[in-house]
Length: 334
Ligand code: LMR
Image (cartoon, rainbow, N blue to C red):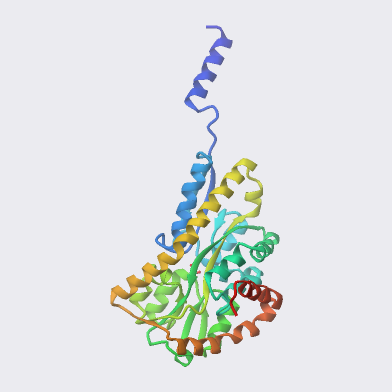
């Protein structure tokens, strides 16, 4: 057989077998700090499924849940270094990055309802906040919801005075620090992965989180009392390393944007039901008392905590707080 014919025959065989053009997939390492069975955990898995399908396998998403790859603080550093490509940190964790405006989401009672939250995250305010990440080498892709927080401790928490002197674990947010100081408590910043053990050993007395995080980290096993206060919000920014994202082929980036859009719809659709399910499971466990604040108690908590919006205006920016309150007014909230 002539050499030319042989070369063509070998090339044809390689193409048919797919070897000739098989390129290694683009790998997205997606690290997060919560359990799989949470709104964020489920949404990360859904994004993996959608992204690999939309890119026909040209992208492979490796999800590393529950702090298995990086804990809170390290994950943002890893993203900036390009050691991981995607994260979905709590909005309360961007202050140390120098983008303190994100702490607007931590202000007690800043969102009278989820409808206000979505107007913020899906509107110009959300876009403007993402722009502040760009100089840090980070691109914001989406906001994922995880709902309102409950409080927990080993004593009943019914009035602001009940918090006096308690060591309360918080995320790395100056607003959350101010929140607990307004209650006379002693806030302690700690990585999410360390909270269960700190509660178990008494390093801290209590904490706050949406029920899905409390339950899936088994905090109800080491906290005798949970108060359904809904005093504050906890959500996420899904972010990527900017250099990685800008360097993707345009068609791949477009496919991933579509996958992220659908994963975000899914994340926000399941958040409330997942948290309701977790709160029910905490009740059924019989290990902790679940107390729902009555209207009088809610008014007392608001009175104690609303001043944090004023005291932290200098850090967050009064205009930003006003813009969020304007969104609430546009929806008829007083
Ligand atoms: C926490 O640290 O309490 C939460 O941000 C964990 C999470 O990502 O939901």
